[in-house]
Length: 91
Image 1 (cartoon, rainbow, N blue to C red):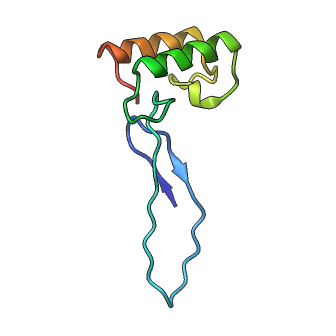
Image 2 (image 1 turned 180 degrees about the horizontal axis):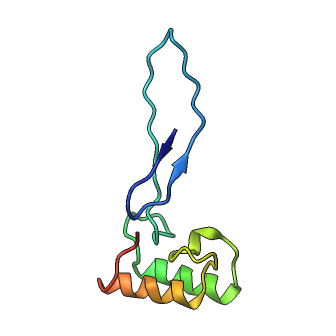
């Protein structure tokens, strides 16, 4: 099963379906730019974590907010700052 929503990271989970039992499952999507998982993307803690990731040259794709294949580069840091000032939105 795959799920996605604008401003969130897509998620895919394997699902096994059996005919004998109905079941419900929840999928939790992580918001882009919410690195400290406080449900408020692009806040001070998120900006600090992005700045640290940029300085460290991380390869963690979570920090690739603009989708250019270069995680935590200056463009991603600038984008997150713009989001924090309501000048841009994360897609």
